[in-house]
Each structure stands twice: as C-alpha cells, then as structure tokens.
Amino acid sequence: NAGVTQTPKFQVLKTGQSMTLQCAQDMNHEYMSWYRQDPGMGLRLIHYSVGAGITDQGEVPNGYNVSRSTTEDFPLRLLSAAPSQTSVYFCASRFSWGKSEKLFFGSGTQLSVL
Amino acid sequence: SQQGEEDPQALSIQEGENATMNCSYKTSINNLQWYRQNSGRGLVHLILIRSNEREKHSGRLRVTLDTSKKSSSLLITASRAADTASYFCATDAGGQNFVFGPGTRLSVLP
View (cartoon, helix red, strand yellow):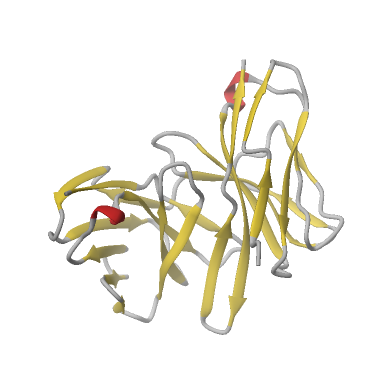
C-alpha cells in the first residue's frame, strides 16, 4: 500500500517558469489537500478538494492552480514561479471513519525558485 | 492566521526524560490532533483528542485537552533518541480543513 505519493522530491526552477507537482493516493480518500511549509510558520493550506471535480482555495492560494479529475490524483500547478514560492510542499489525503480522523502525508517536494 | 501555537519552539532533553509540548488555539474546536515530522519527511499522525475528551493515551504518549483554556499538551514519557522530531498540533474547527501550528522541535540526546 503506497499511501500518498509525491513527485518530484526536489526541483529547482527559474523565476517565471511553470511546473506541476504530482500527488497520487491509493486509499480512495475523497479529501485531498496541498500545504506549503516554511521555517517557523508550520503548514499553510494552499488548495483542497473534497472529491473529484471539486476544488477550493485555502489560506495561501495565489500563484497556484489545482484540478481533481480523478479521486486518486491532485496535481498542483505553479503558473509563473516566484522566489517567494521557494518552500517544501506536502500533499495530504484525509481518512474519516466514525470517530477516527487523520491526514496521511506524502514525503514532500522541496522547491527552490531562483 | 494560525489557529494553533505550540510552545516551546524547541526543546532539548536527555534520553529517558519526559518531554512536554503545549498547544494553544483561538476558536472552538471539534477535535485536536498531534503529528510528528522527522527531518526531511512528511507528517505522521500520532493521536486525536475530541472536544468532549480531557485525556487520551497511546503507548508512551499522553494528550490532554482543556477547552476552557483552549490548550492541549502532549507528553512523551521515557523519551528515546528516535523521538527526535518536530511535533505539530492541528485543530479541526468544524470546517473542511485542519489548521497547523508552527511546531515544537524536540531533540533527545543520548
């Protein structure tokens, strides 16, 4: 059982370039989300999705796009990379059953924008 | 704005000692969760405590919740070097999402 898989693990971009961070989960979770982690600031929510075809903005959505065409995949697109987007990005899916609830995280993508 | 704030920001203890981390939050919650993050890895869920619970245990972990003070604490007993990690609280305020605090960095020295 792979859980949540993120690719790539590392990426260096030049200002203005675009790219897509991939996220896939094999647990049939309806809810998926993208966070960015910056030193001293914890995780901040970028975008989330409660099911295929449904996406919504989180706390810091500017400069990012998402789509959810299938339950399994939730890619994050950087439209025109900026140095302020240098960060570690995490994808997560949520398990909810009765009183049990938890997020499963991918291993992260470390992005540097020069 | 962040819902949860962990305290202290960093904690260094000797192996075998207990480690206590605190989390304060601002609004009413449905539940509060604690996660651990090893260096360079994703977060891993440790424990969930609901708003109507005051204390939960899981192995060497003990979590308390005081809704009147809007605070929670995570106690790790008999710490080991392998407990070295960052620990985050996350709150569920009834919306779709969890809100994470900035974390406590725990170092357990052998």
